[in-house]
Amino acid sequence: MIEKNTQIIARAAEMTTTPFYLYDQKTIDRKCSDLKSMPNAYGIQVRYAMKANSTKAMLETICLDNGLGIDASSLNEARRANAAGVPYKEIMLTTQEVPEGSDRAELEYMISEGLKYNICSMRQLKQISSFASDKNIPLSMRVHPGVGSGESATRNTGDKYSCFGIHLTDLKRALNFAKNKNIIFDQVHVHIGSGGDPAKWRENIDRELGFVENHFLNTYYNQPISKISFGGGLKVARMPGETSADIQDLGKYAAEKISEFARRTRRELTMEIEPGTYPVANSGYLVTKVIDKKQTGPDGFEFLVLDGGMEVNTRPLLYGSEHPFYIVSSSGKLLSTETDLSKLDPEKDQRVVVGRCCESGDSQSLDETGHIVPRVMANPNIGDFVVVGGCGAYCSTMTPFNYNSHTQAPEIMLDREGKLKIIRHPQALHEITKNEVSIKDS
Picture 1 (tube, one colour):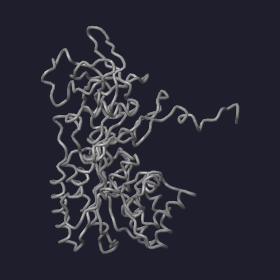
Picture 2 (picture 1 turned 30 degrees about the vertical axis):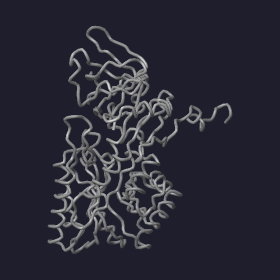
Picture 3 (picture 1 turned 180 degrees about the vertical axis):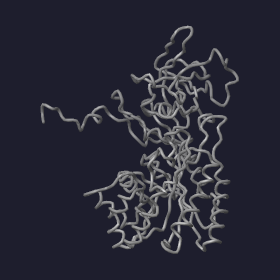
Picture 4 (picture 1 turned 45 degrees about the horizontal axis):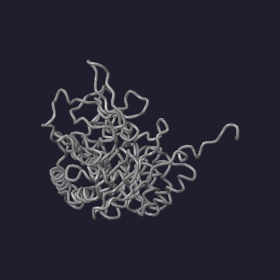
């Protein structure tokens, strides 16, 4: 979107204050279509991992317009999706929470309305057992496979350093409990991490089908498994030189393995996936403005100070993630882009972009150890734009936007007709403090 029409940046900037997020609805539509057409053997259900971006307009676009279900990671996410118009029967809840009291009562209501509860621990299983058994409601189980893969250690959700799901060594205990309580499982779920090696994703397909057959479907437990979820974490290329996961290839592999499974077991399993990054990451941009320039001497760096940094995109600080930069003049002219740096001097045009937070890690260009890495880009003027690409996922939802009392950034959608629409207004300062109470008044 940016390279084809940089004037869109200047137009959007007239509607609100920088920094702001800008999304392209057509890109989201195309990515959702790609996911729904992923090869499969006996059907596919795609759930959107809404933690990636949970703005109401995003949920409406992905779920109501494109027909994807929801993967919720908390009760509040399930509530929020439902408030956006997504029925509970289209939502699966996979959470570390153990709801009690009114939350547990609401969870039971959600389940009775069709929400799929994905059990992630023995305590969760015990808490919901009476309700599920009495109502004869099938559950899902997330299994911890002992092996994972992610773009960084903090995004690996399947190895011994993470505690997501019921570990394989507890599987027999969980299934024995379920059998004694007359609990039904009709789905098994494994998610090994985000943005990891596609080869590991294929290995997970083999591994998961193996323990479904050996544990859930053996003659003693004989659970009515009809669906298998391989989780999300499909790798997305944000930077030139990176390679996205080939979802057609992964789908073909999964379909082949599920077909082989059916020939052995006479069980035809529906495949489920739950991507978050894939449908939205490259639909989104963070638009910031250059507010200052600094330097740190002949052996230092040239800094561009932006009005948005870690408080609007914390992925570089958290993960050492790289995002593409687009330097755009205040009038909307493209000065440089990550895909074509041929007109720039690779030595003289090295710069570092930093934000306005009082934090040395507030940079959009860091390595995995937290050290600043200069990047080649054009030299903008004060007031020009630095646009950060690949910011549709895990930016607006995950960043510490009130750090240093900065307010939450607004969001704009470029809709299918080419119209710019504000989908989140900028937060006001009083909204940060509205639930604070003076100790003198309490």
